Image (cartoon, rainbow, N blue to C red; front, side):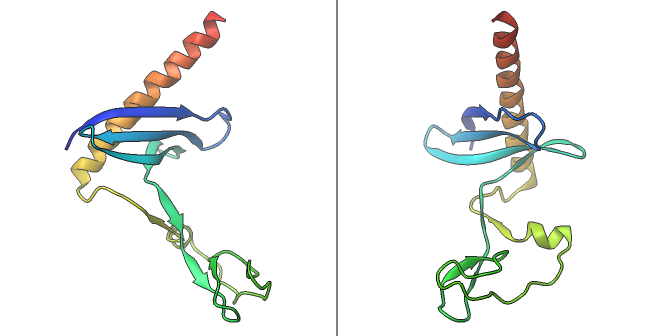
Length: 130
């Protein structure tokens, strides 16, 4: 499987950790949207598209984000959540799609970060030329 296209949407707020979103096309046939490019303590990395884990309201049965204090449907209090470690906070999100092999993840990251650097350089050269 080859990456045939990477589109980058740069974020304007350079003070935030989220630097851009990527849309990645594989073999001109399969697209993954909302791959995040994030500035971490050890440099840039990619985060796959994810969704928040949800819990059921004990009163009405509605699905709510695990961090909600009150049910979004009936307004009743949700059971309190214990203090969380950073690993537990990260576990509140589940990847919708992700590479299975480490080699493929590294390949994706290289291609996406390369496209990000090109998009960033283009934007800077356009701003310098204006």
